[in-house]
Image (cartoon, rainbow, N blue to C red):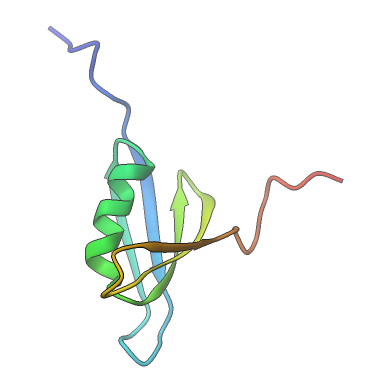
Length: 84
């Protein structure tokens, strides 16, 4: 029997650029939503800048402050959904 209450998983990519804290990395994973994806990103970023994609669409740039306990979030760099 299928569980009809099961949440749909989304595909995520977390892209970290090469910087003074580490090399460039691409991390692909599935999560039930952006909140769950940010929990994983928090463990991977540790003060580094990254860009988070959900199902191929950029959600924006982010940085988790290592000692501040908060996120700095910026709009997507290359938005595909622009009109006009």
